[in-house]
Image (cartoon, rainbow, N blue to C red; front, side, top):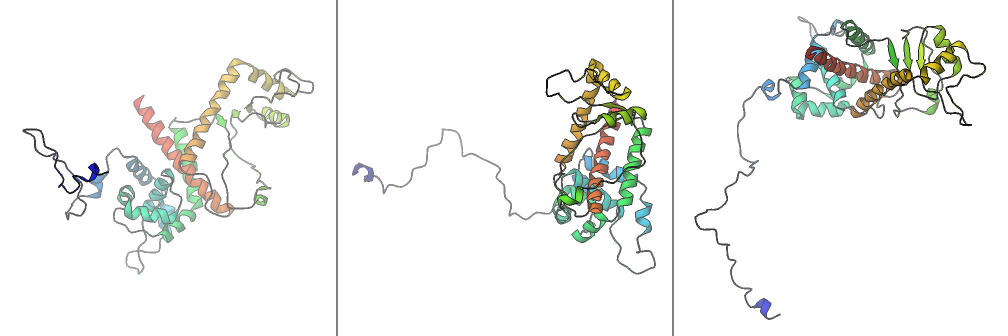
Length: 310
């Protein structure tokens, strides 16, 4: 113990530096230093940033229905609102970015470079953003239909084969709200319908066969371990044809196309589709329309780029 205290009062000795070398020189961050920066917002966002494609997409849309209801006109009093084109672009980009709150989007419009670039100096508030989000269901439905029609017309997609898969989304409603389902009286009938296995009834397969629709769905495994593809007594023409198709190697290979639909669900999860933040059937439909329009827009970009490369 005595030895430990012999030299405790001696001053600290600096480590001798190697001969011929000075102290280390580094560039350390200095965040309190005053500086002036002059730059245009457009120069801060790369030319290949996907937000530019979103803005170009919105600029090419027919939004006359949104402009016709604006009351602020030249020569008349009233505060001018934000451009509908800007509001649409903000919510499309926010949907892609997984932003589902008007308050969060309002903060991003002040603090985040990409959202500030979209705004271009136009101030935002969450009331206007929230109101715009739920006020134009008819416009969103038209954009969704026109978007699909445009991709079909351009040869990017085909409606001849339809795949269906479910996605569980928590809703702000009671279980009793989902006991009834509206009946679809009209709609495009595909030639091929790919659905999940184990849920299709023989009656539905017969109805589809009678209407020229081929159902592609693996049969459920039997309790006794018998061949589910083997013909059974009472099978109609449609069910017999379905068993024969699904038994073949070509049928199994064709059914594997349904896995592509899983990517859509994965994209929806990535964009934050886990819980509906809006209450009521109409608002819930609007919420889903934003996701559908945003997803189809991104698929259009990807398919168009692929077609151009080819």
